[in-house]
Structures are given as structure tokens and as C-alpha cells.
Figure 1 (cartoon, rainbow, N blue to C red):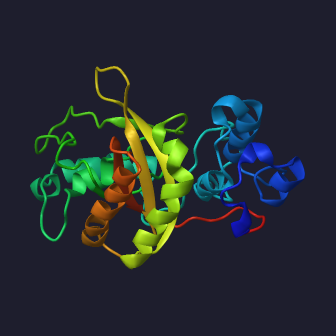
Figure 2: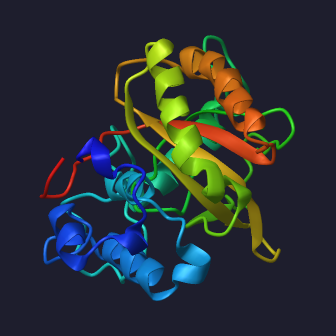
Length: 260
């Protein structure tokens, strides 16, 4: 993307400019197009959305997204060794019977069970969690070894609108990118998201706003992203944003056709 457009607001651009940027037009992901149209239709409440925000969203959408996806539903970057739905059942059976997979075993920082199932449900090939800033305060339910009737919580990803973070995102996002670079991290995507969760026998609940960061596959490790997290939280705190979580995963992103 032309750097001159990073801080420009979507509502201030012409349709021709939005097409040139790859935010509207025939080859645009349905979710990105729907977002831009929603912003243009509601400038009072969504007028602060910038090109940078939409470009970050654009990174989440694969150029090969299946055509049956409904408008506005999230598709996600391609993830290495991500299990298919049928493989997920087999993986659960394997991990739930492995006591080591249910606990943290060095050099891992989280259990293999949580690593594989934290994002269960958000897509057919959810990523593996590398690290999250609320690990200590928000424990993930772990089955007892060999449990047969444990049901993995199911997540759904949602967009983030009208929050204090939206108002400062075009300021803090470049700072977060700079911080990651200073830590030697190579990112694939930086965006915000909220996850809703359904646990067995319970109603759907919504979690906090998440600063969701993908790093390029095989370029770093959980320890490095954990160590980079405090600086990101500090950037957010300086902007009076304290009620968010930082989560890291590994994934490659294929950009849509259009200007970079």
C-alpha cells in the first residue's frame, strides 16, 4: 500500500481510490468488501476506520478462500501443519491420552493440548497458539487424562468496532510493528479480533479485544514472542488501552491481487 494512504479514512476516499487500493472490486475478499461498504454506509459510527485498519484485515483473507464462504465470515491465513476437521478428532484422542500433552513440558511454554485447541472452531484449519498475555489469569480447560466425554470449547472470531482501541489503532499499530521489528520478529499479520466461546452446556460468552499477531513460520519461537509482549502492552497502556489481550500464532498470509 502507498504509505500516503495509511492514515487516510475510508469514508474520505472515492470508490476509484478504494478499488485501486484493493478494498473494492471484483477480486476483493467478500469480508473486506463488506467491511468497506459498512463503513461507508455508517460514517457517524465507523468514520474513524483507516486504510491501515482495512489493510490489516485484508491480510487475514486468503486469495484462495472457498467461494461458499458467506459475506463477512472470516477466513484465515494458511497455517503450517494445521489439522483438518477429521484429523482434529484423532488429535484430541491422541493428546487427551498423553499426560505430557496436558501439562507444560519444557521447552514449551504452554501445553500441547492448549496449543492445538485454543482456537478450536474459528476455521477448518485453526492456527496453533504460541503465546497469550492472559495465560496466567485465564486458564484453558484441560481434560483429565483419558477423559471420554470432555468437550473442547468452540470459538468464533468477530470484528472489533467502536472500542477505545479503534480510536487509537492507527497510532499504536505502527508502534507495535516497530516494536516487533526491534525484537527481530517477522510478522505476517497484525489485526484486532474478539472471540466468542461456547463451552459444553453453557451460553456463548465474549472475551476481551485481542491484538492478534501472526509471525512468519519457522522464524521465531514462543519464548521470543512472550518476551516481546510486555513492550506491546506498554504501548497500549501509554494510549490508555489496558483491557486487551495479546495473542500470537504462526501463519503465512497470501495477499489478494491488487496494489501492495
